[in-house]
Every structure is written in C-alpha cells, then in structure tokens.
Image (cartoon, rainbow, N blue to C red; front, side, top):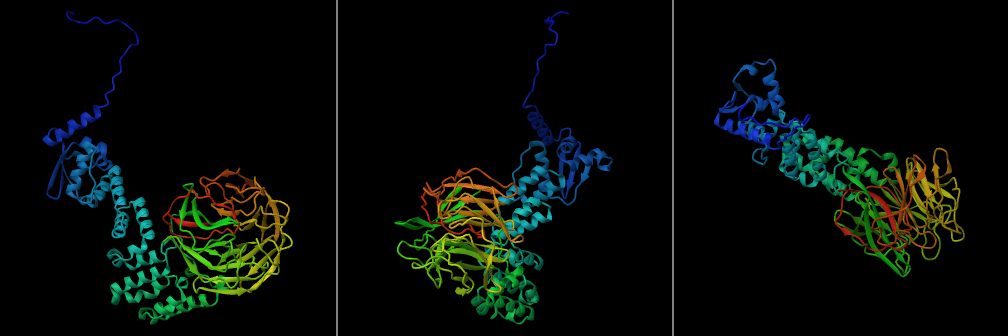
Length: 603
C-alpha cells in the first residue's frame, strides 16, 4: 500500500499510555457542555428553578440519582424531574460539584447545603459541611449546631457539639440558646456527670436563670431541676444564704427535702459514705486525662515551693504556680477540683498550714490550718474529706489524726492511731483508710491500721511481710499495693499486695530498682513507681507494673522529669481535678522530699 509505514515485527512489544489529565479534561468538557445545554438529557425542577444536566454524570456521583435513573422508576424514562424538600441554590451547587469536584462551604450556605448533600448521598460534601460547623463551635451557637446535627443524623458532629456544650457549660448557660432549650434538654445537661463546672453553684444559677426566663410557665419544673443539682456539694453558707432564701425553691416541699439532705450531708461528715447518692458524686469532665503533680521538696538547705505537672499523654512537664510556702515532707491529695498541700517542713519548722491549688486560675490559696504541726505525715481523701494522720511535729512522732471538710473549712480531730508513725503512707480502700508502715522513732514498722469513719476507730489490719517506711502506696482493682521503702537497713525493691477479702498480704513482682521516698500512682490500670531514692542517689526514672501479668516493666527516665532528678517523700492518690491550667515546659530540678499525686484534668 502506497505511503504505508513498514514496522518491525517484534512480538509482544507495545507502548502503554496513561493520561493523568484525561478524567479532569473530560469532566471539564462535560461541564462546558452542560453550561451550553449540549447533550443534556435531564432537567431538574426545584421550586421555580430549572437545572440542566447529564444523567450519567449525576448517577456516577450520587447514589440518589443512580437509583432514580437506573431502576424501573418512572424518572428513568423522563427528561424532566421535579424534586421536593431541597433548596434550589444548594441543588445547583451540588450539580456543579458533580462536574467540578469543587464546592465552597461557608456560613451563608451550610444550613441548606448539608441537608441537600444528605438527601443526594454526597457524603464528601456532607462531611465538609460538618467539618465547617465543627470549626465554628462557640458557646453562643453550640446548642444550635448540636440540634442541627441531631436533625440531620450527623453523629460525629452531634457528639462533638454535645461534648463542647458540657465542657463550656458556664458560658453556654448565659446564652439565649440555653434559655430557649426545652425542659428535657436542660435536665439532660444538668444531670450529666461530665458537666464541666468550677463549682456546683454554676449549675444552680444556670437552672434558676432558665426558670426565671419564663417563670410562669417554668416554675412547676423547679423540683425536677433541683434533683439534678448536686446541692450537697454546695457550701453550707451558700445553701443557707442563697438556696434556702430563694422563693422558687423554699415553697416546694420536694425542694425543702433536698435542702435538708444537703445540710445533713454537711452536719454528719462521718456518715457521708452512707448518705452518698448521685447528688453527692463530684462531676468528672469528659475528656479528662491523667496528670501527675509534683509539689514542693528540696534538700535540707534548699527547700522550695515549686510545683510541676506531668501529662502522660504528651510526655511533658509543665510549670504551674508555686506554693506560697516552701514545703518538704508535705502531704498532698486532691479533693473535688482542688489539690491540697498539707503541713510539711519549711527548713525551719514543721508546719500546720495548708494551701490548695485551683487549676482553673493556676493559683494557690491558704486554707484553714491543722490543729497540729505535721511533717512526714500520711494524707488521703475519703467521701470528699481530707484526712491527715501521724507525722512529726518537731519534737515527737505522732499518732494523732484529723479530718478537714472543704465544704465547711473546718478541721476535726478523729480517733488516734494505736501506734505513733512518721514517714507513714495512707490510702483509701473500700470506704476505709489504711495507715501503712512508717517509723515510730525507734524502729521501722510492718504494722498496718484500718480506720472506719462511721465508727471513728482504728483497728489492726494484717501486718506487711516486710518493715517499710517511706514506701509507695496505691490502690488498684480493689487491692492495696505497697512498693519499696526502707526497712532500717536498706532501700527495698520488693512489692506486696493486700486483699481486704483475704485479709492477708502476698508478694508480687519486685521493682527493677530499689526505691524509697518515692511515689506509687495508679493510672489507666497500671501502677507507676515514680522517682525516689535508691539509698545513695536521687532517681529520675519511672517503672510500671501490670497487675494482670504480674510483671514490672523496665525502668526508664521520664522526659524532663523534674529536670535532672526526681525524688519524693509523700502520699499518692488518684482523685479527680477537672480543669486544665496554663503553664510552660519545665526544666526545673526537683530534689528529694516533694510529693506526687495523680489527678484528672480536662484538656
């Protein structure tokens, strides 16, 4: 054939061509054809608007249109289809998106675009709308966004908006959206354990504000609402000065019963374990995570009041406000949403003073002093009360104990232990306090005493297998663990566990490192042994124990733990604090005799 090329015969030789722009160029061409009305085979009618398109493009992008045009529906044979329950402008934008894969979501169109995308099953656009609304969450609109998400079954957005409402409740409760909520939703919010409030006073005030917004229609709901307010967590002064003085409350017999219940909770602190109800349980903000606080410490000639917090999720230390008083050998515990530093030694004298840390304001403030000076004491919390036991007053080892009620700001002496104990550790288990080991000025102790608050008495519990002072003590999964300490001759790495059901101690896996004056912290189902002293030097390492496998993980250095060294000499607890605090990354060294405590903060 004239002009034909002669090609070499090479069996199996081919050239593959793949154009990355083909799909893009094809859709650009189809979009231009739609704009000019070329080869369009469907006209969508919505309200007074007509939108021309190609069935194949719509069906390829939208399961809704795919079902309409490929099944035996009448629309599959029609060239004109009328749509209902969809915004015309939103439909036009979504048809254009089918051709261009581009759409702009903003304040002006998100409320019409999201339901339209949901109808057409354009999940990518729907997700983009949810992402935009999530970025717009604010106390002034979060309730509206939550309702919008619920209406259109956007489960992730609904959960996020609800979580935002709970975490920002104090500001949300001041908005018009809150005032317009129906009773059911108000009850749902104020009854939530996850409500983030600095004080239960905020919940009480929010409820009254909602009622007074339409008092004639809403006064009948006051008893139901007050059942959701945790009145026992309010101070006695607030109960008498505000709650009892409020006419909306005092004229309802049911509300008077709730007020009496709250006052009884205050007047009978030793009975709080029996009087406990859902209204006496502190709220715990959703999103809270474990954080270690290190409080005070120092060497004999360099005692300080510095404080730091370690977030296990970020593996970072943050400096927080320093105490007003330098404290070593201090007792630390968390009650409600505050951290308490109790007694200690300031380098000159043993202390009776107490101060508390508010993570909302990142400040320490003085509390009522104990009746007795105490350093090297044991501290623990039980039923919202702070207990201080044993210690050293500068002259002698103590067996006395006292209890602090943060709601009334008063210390009360309780029954004394049968044995004088300093360097004692105290922990709460099954509604009782256990004073573990210590030093009585002549020998290190293996004995243990149990305090029952309802009868105000200490009774002997089974003695430990080893003598221990300055040991780490923690409660995990219904058992009391004691790790390390000093037996009078050396620091220990042995660990034992007490079961209240069996009434006996048993040995478990030892720590990898000998530790005394350290802290044992229960978090996330693990025990963490933090810092301490091995008999010759301070430690800046941590190791953890898994009770399910009875294995101790190898020790590792904590990133930035107190800078270069970490040793503590105090109690540990696992109570809850609900608010995060400002701070910067710390590089401060921490010398012996500080205290560590595990708490929960929201982030």
